[in-house]
Image: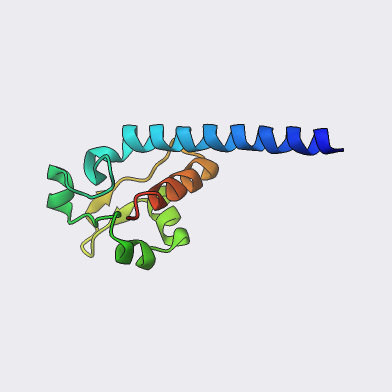
Length: 108
C-alpha cells in the first residue's frame, strides 16, 4: 500500500513538473514577445498595447483565473473591436490552464 502511494505521488510530481515545463515553454514561445519573459509587459509591443505587469501583486489579485483563461482561449479586443491579442487556437484547455498557473508564478 505504501509503495503504491509513493509511486503515485512520484508519478504525479513528474507529470506536474513536465506540465509546468510545457507551460513555460509555451509562454516563452507564444506570450513573452508581448508580455515579456518575466511577465512585466515591458516589451515594445507590451508598451504599445498597455499590457499589465503580472509581477505586481495587485494586478495578480485583480486577475481572475476564469477571465485569464477566456482571454487566452478567445483572445482580446478593444472597445472598437480591434484585436489586441489573438486567440490561442492551437492550445488545449489543459494547456491554457497551465499557462494561467504559470502566469501566477510571476507575482512578487
